[in-house]
Length: 329
Image (cartoon, rainbow, N blue to C red; front, side, top):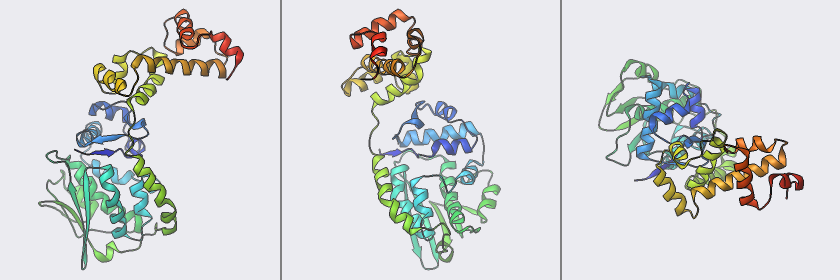
């Protein structure tokens, strides 16, 4: 079973759809910090759970259409950027196909046969099956893309999928053609339309940015450590005092035992991460602000100042007042 990089524009897309990302993650049973992680990968199961969370939150039978309506050319999604820099839909789809398997459990094949060109989608990681609305969204996006690039209302010749959306009429109105129930998932265009020039084409920009896009996409394979995730969750939770392993585990959608096992595998412990985070924050407050020690203690999640003083001395061998007097090291 593979894993896939979360789209870097996911939060902005959800906001444009009128959806609160935190609500979607809660419905999907995924970690609260999922979309704030710099590099996150999802299993197929979690990828589909995320989409189901969007469905449940929106409660809109026309979700795929809504999605295509809010996608904007200025969103710096590497596959979309690569596509819109292309000279036409065929090249755009070929470029997307190179990156698609990194960001979704999908294989995209571009088949040009004479006067027709077909984009075929194969969903990977069986026996898991994708949500119907997700499949339909991918099909509709091919049409939205060619319209975005050409600034013309291009209509496909044929759109087929294994399960038709309901209600069907709005989708057929969006496409400008009837949808068919078939054995696979495909969108077919007249080759003349698929080769129609993109007004957004910019091969010089593409040549300049392609190495960076390749690097960014290769970075998607780099894991985000549990230690880093715990530290980020602590930075949010410390002022409220919610710093127990159970509380942080809930934020990261993992049990206390799993959290403990993962940080130990990374050569540390939960208490060590908590102490290091508190010490770093304490030094920041002492060196960069005039906050009194009692307020710093509160911001670090201590019940009373004396606990903060004792902890600070155990971390540093000195007192908060001495650190403030000496200033940055």
